[in-house]
Length: 551
Image (cartoon, rainbow, N blue to C red; front, side):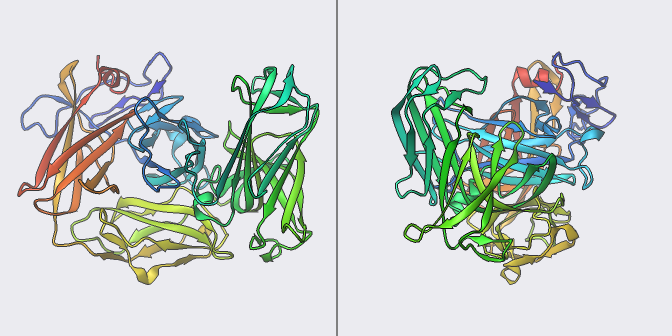
């Protein structure tokens, strides 16, 4: 675990230090600006310039994933810029825990981690939970600011449309890690087929042979024509590829994705196949668009096969595969490969443009200072799903997104509000065509407000530590708000303990929540004539020590 620390005359934030918590900077306390004579010292978060708000969504239900008691939604960071990412509290860990479907990260404010178009901060978020498929999403940040993204996960008991799962238990015969008989597995309608030949030697990630006995096989097929399946696409539709020692970013045009897992009788997973290659076959819809030809696929087209490198969040080119029209069964492609993980049959349109589009809103919605706008990005060429888009920020600021489609023409279908957010992009600019994100045009978004007669309130948050009651903490964690009977949430900025909340109705009850350090703090309030509401956060001893340096 690492923590960050830095205190100057007006702020305190933490910079990366060693595991022994030795600070790069000395500490100096400051006067409480809200104290009115109170001599308590104040810890603020003025040095945080970039926050990343993440929601974890069940791909079938569309709801936030709240694990059952005793289970944890674990989150890791991999990739080139892993060292830049910390929990919003200022602590860096090998593993983070999401709460109530939320997690919030920040970028280390040290100069080496300041994002720019020439030096982007790029990393992959990896989420895992029992009974769900491990999911990942690549993030690219080129400007400081607030970012939001959603990571969709597949419940193996209730997969979304377009995701098919087949399991076989206690099959084959393994002796000293070597398969004695050929074993195969197929989805119900043969969308995906994998054959493991006799003689194949199966090893785990530590190159240790699997146990003697039977095998357990699981095969997953992800359709390229279903939004819900594409939303769970490993790493996302925008990604980074390694080919011939060069690394390129760009956009996938998927023909389909297959994931295959092998485990032994002790449930150790195979990661390496030796001696013989697997045979992987996948059906491809005749509605699949080939960006090379500019039309739907035909017999003889070639599509690339990429395999996923989970330790880096990158894709590696494996080989070219030929698409064959089988006449009776439609289009198929078949390859032999020694790789064992995700099989991504896709065309890749590289762009090496790191910047995503930049937006500004032309006016605010009634009293709103913070806005949250949502939509779906699709390719213009075939209308296929690229990503959900979530804009968060203050209305007078430039708003950025954590991905880029580069020169691949796309459009955005904007959501038209819900019971949590009455402010949305004017339907007159939906769909919004974007021919080239690399152009860096600043896109103006007119807004529409369907809210009733409402009021705005100010919420103040004051943190404290039992170990030193002379210090108060004014956090900048970000805030989530919803009506008490709703399941959707609306985001609001929180700066040094202050959040402006708009579009609330007198007499109605709301839930407010915030995330930090694997914890979810929640309050319920009923709106009265008061304009300001104050909430307390009692930090644990470990947070006070490891994040704030309070003994």
